[in-house]
Image (cartoon, rainbow, N blue to C red; front, top):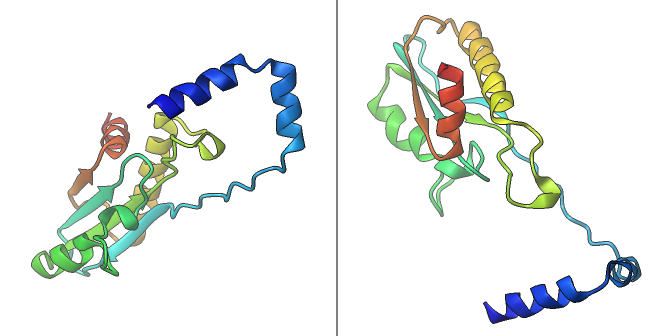
Length: 152
């Protein structure tokens, strides 16, 4: 905590002109672009599906890693639920949920994410003939707010 405080005070005490000069003299840092898998991904498909179950991740997550345990190659909904729920399609949805790092913060608002999810689900369900099936959302964190907007 003290290191942070000292660094903060040092930075805050630096006049703006000096701060600008010091940032110009240092080489620009290369911030890698964070990519995220977006849209609907079908983890398990069933020709006679009676229900769709859609997993929606939260803050800084993505549709693959959020639902995958360390050391595993596939998401747990695919490996654990698919064999138990043969009459269900299991889906996962990805969106840009990076709101922490300033260099990669998503410019999308909650309503934008919800609109994208709704459009992607309508398209996917229509293409698989599942438009009339019940839909269950399993969400985490921000994903719950996105789904709430979809429902509203």
